[in-house]
Image (cartoon, rainbow, N blue to C red):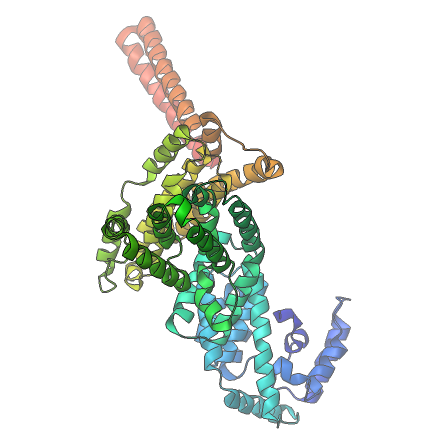
Length: 557
């Protein structure tokens, strides 16, 4: 529900105004307003009806909260932070909803959802009913006597919250949406808090990713039909990228699905692939199947059902083949320790946290481009740096850092590290351009935009956003319309996409050279005409003209 749909707002009245004042304000509106499509008499009838009025009352403000709202009601999208100054949980919810529906709220999605979730959980129907009836007594309106009416209205408020969440998530980049959903899931369902608004949000997220998940399912199941023609390890390579994506998308829904008995696509395709692996043990060899099962563990780490099943399978295989399998598992364990992101204590200071994390990702920005370029030259479909290093290591480390509360205690650290991390995603995006992976490149630039906003560096924000818009425009204009063709760009085309810096540098060098040549010529002419005095006069003239040029340049700015 939008603010502009509430009867109190449309008539410019409050819950404390008596019937005759409501009627007068309706007449004023009919006299003053142009034909704006609002039925003011219908709004008047709603507020004069004890039954219909309750819907508007539940979505309005009272006492001190009404004073706060009155001071900001014309630009609520700019003052969503005022919600946290309000006394009533219901008032906080109402202002957040109206702010979300009126414009782009600067607060993160996870902050909004967790705030709404907490406020809705704190609602006391009895105290709200008492406040509404006190206002009705002043206004001369019959009191609400049936508490069930109030319960019903509070329940229907969840629909308004759901609508506002759908509104703000429709424009959110998919990678950011997934990260925010994962954080919300961990903070609510991950802690055993199955509250109403968290459930509403996760159901919205589940609905939003359904089409993408279904497409991935179809692609994977189509590849699995070739099971009898190729080895399992090759079959796994063919589906690995899609497998990782579907598990990443559904990671926020693991706990939610188990509580609400929701079937996930990731579990479905896991079961199908696992059954194929078990069937092919005799043909492909038990050790080859064991290695694939171990690789699956890294992909399925977020899904407890899949991990539990994989542990059972690998334990049974180890009993059959003995020590060699244990050695293989030890190698996997050692390699996984290299990318372990949980080794940093949450008890560290903010400075220690940022230093530890920065040590893990130091010097990776520019190298990412070179690594991916090298891989692409070696083989056009090779993106192992992105899939096997960047996503499971760097991306995971960064997300862990931003979820560590100690990290936020030093604002300067947050800004400095955010700018650095934005650069890492920017360089990863540039590397992916060499592979023709335009979708992945855009996703990395979306992440770069997300982090660079936290840096408060206008120059870097403008640079990264400009690069994102340039590549997005190219993608929509040149890549999407020809999705059946594999488009590859040469280095000069990529340089023109990611930056015009080189052109500026060349232009600057040319200007410097011409400037030096001009000075030499002027000094030579001065010397030829009047000797040493001519040189002095030439210098004085150049200084005067230089100062004049600087003055005119400043005037233009």
